[in-house]
Length: 71
Image (tube, rainbow, N blue to C red; front, side):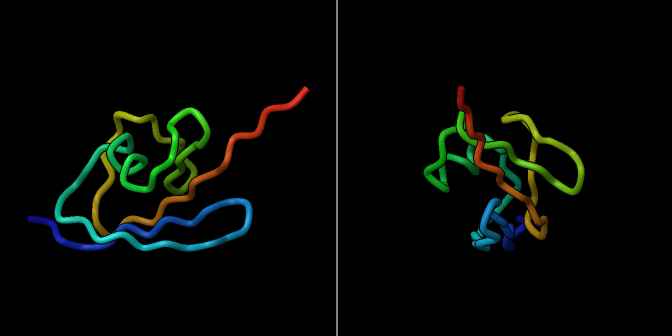
């Protein structure tokens, strides 16, 4: 088992949250844990945009960007 934390940084704002996970998980599962809609955010690791099927692991730092649309 890979028990550990994933650090989430929300942008804009810079709020940080740490969630304890007992194993790797897909971005989709992470967003459900955070009660976030996959259609309203973009998850980034470093300079890589992660799709919902990508795997994230304990120890990683992710940035979650709110997607805004307007006319």
